[in-house]
Amino acid sequence: MAPKEVAKPYSGQEFKDAPRKDSGDPSVAQKSGLFAFFVFIRAIHPTVIDASKTVGADGSRSFPYGVQTANLAEVCVSTAGAMSIAWYKGEWKLIWKPAALSTFTFLGVLFGIGDFLEMRSMASLSGGAYQILLQSRLLITALMRWYFNGTGQTPLQWNLLALVALSMTAYMCIDMDSEKLHSGATIDGIFNAAAKVGISCLAAVLLEKYSKEFRAKYGKQPVYIQAIQQRLSRLVVLTLLVILEGRAWQYGFWGGWNAWTVGVALSHMMKAWSTVYLLVYLDAVLKNIGEAVAVLATYLMEVMLPIFDTNFHFTPLLVVMIVMLSVSAYLGSSNLISKASQYDDLKKKYDALILAEGAQVFRPV
Image (cartoon, rainbow, N blue to C red; front, side):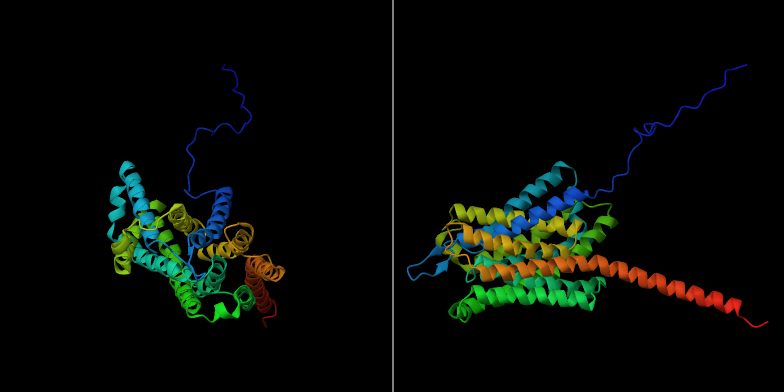
C-alpha cells in the first residue's frame, strides 16, 4: 500500500513564475513624479522665456532672436529623435495609421498655434503675468470637459473655479501698475494670452479624449507615437510662421541666439512632452491645477533670481496663497461630491425598495 501523500502548506511562492498582466499604466509614485515634474517645468518655462529678453535703451524688453525659431528647433529635434526610436523599435508603421494620424495632426495644428500665441503674449508680458492669465484655463477646461465628455460640475465647484480665476485677476492687477495695464503692448499680450488659453484648453481636452480612445483601440498605442503625429503638423505650422515672420530671412535662423535661447528651446521640449504624458495618464483638469500650483513657484523665481528686478511684496504673495487654497478646496470637493452623489443614488434605491416592500405588505386581500 502506497504511503498517503501529505499536502504541503501554502507558502505563497507557488505562482511566482506565472506571467503577470501588465496594464501598461504607471504606478501611483510615477504619476506623482510626473505631476511634480510638470509643475516644475511649467514654473520655469515662462521664467526662462522672460530671461531671454534683452533690455533696450528705452528700458523696453524684447526678444533678440526670431520668436518662433526656438519652437521650430525644438519640434525638429523632438520629431527626429522620436521617429528614430519608432524606427529602432519596429513601430514605424504605427505613425501612419490614417484614423489616428488625421486626429492627432489636427491637434498638432492647435498646439502649434498655441505656441505662436504664447511667444506673442510673452513679448509684452512678464513670466508671472503670463502665468496668471493662464489660470483662466481651469474654468475653461471644466466647461469644455462638460461639453465634450459630459463631465459636469456642482455649483460649489463652479464657485471655487470662479474664485481661482478672480483671485488670479486680482494678482495681475496688483503686480502690474496702471501704466503697464493700459498700454497697447500689454493689451495685445493679454488678448494673445486669452486666445492661447482657449486654443490650448480645446487641444488639451481633445487630446485627453482621443489619446485614451486610440490607446484602447490599438492595444495601448505608445504615447510617443501620438506625439510624433502631433509634431508633424506642428512642424509645418511653425515653419510657415518663421517664414512669415521675416526675421529669419534678414538675420538668419540662428540670428540673436544665445545660451538663454537654447534654454527656451529645451524648456519648450520638456513642457511639450510632460504635457502629453500628463494628459494621457492623468487628465486635463489636473494639468491646469498643476499650472495653478506653478504660479507660486514662478513668482518666487522672479523674486529670488538676480536677473529679474521684481521685489518681494507681501500682498501678491497673499493673493497667490488664496489661489492655492482655492485649488486645494476644489480638489477636496471632488472626492466629497462623488461620495455624496453615490450616497444619494443608494438612498433613492433604498427608498424605492422600502416603498415596494411596503406595497406588498399592505396590499389589500
